[in-house]
Length: 292
Image (cartoon, rainbow, N blue to C red; front, top):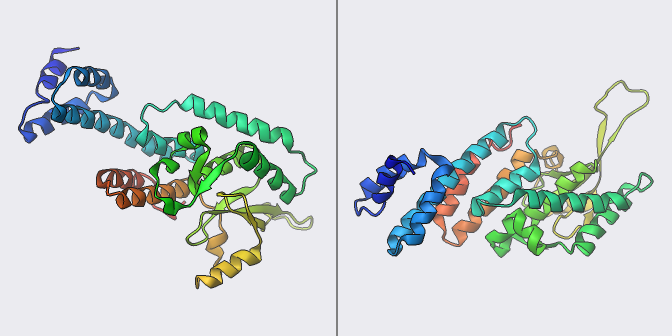
């Protein structure tokens, strides 16, 4: 430990808040390298208020690091959805074992891939897929109104098999992407649901894009399938015009933004204002919502 760090650590218990703020900002310059020194200091500190200061400093270092990770993720041309969910989980679990999550994810992908074949219709494909996720892995979705922050963290979904529409949905979508199943999240108001979108190509047309056709919709909480008519009836019920924008696939950035929006509301509901504010700071690092 160098002399400057030693001198700064000795000042952490200074009763003057201005002194502490100066010390904190200087320590933050050292980044994650300072964490082992702070943890050692915490272990030999008896005063609880000083321990709280040290915990706050450790959190600030992790949070600063996470901000950089979010910026990099958001600026990627095609940010990976699963990686975005892992970054959200790292807010609560900074020492998250990412390789363990990716290994579990790959095992899930493999188990689904072994059951699929090219002769299945889209609905049969989804039935096989859902059977593995909801029956074999016993994934269980909880409504967002449950207000449980733990359901927003992908590592806890992997461990407990319980999540909400966003975490289970992100797992669902990331697996679909790996398996080349054309299922995408769409922006139906007040819901987080998916559409199975076929791209139809006409033999006589030179248009390479083709015509996108929605076969059906899926609720990630349970895997339940809905028809176009079901969704149109829902839109009428909430007095929403049947707009084309509701059926346009959402980007990874937009999905993570919406997920964090709900997590921030969850923290506000639990009166954890600092956490809610920090989640909103992270949200601001993503591209403007709704833009691609």
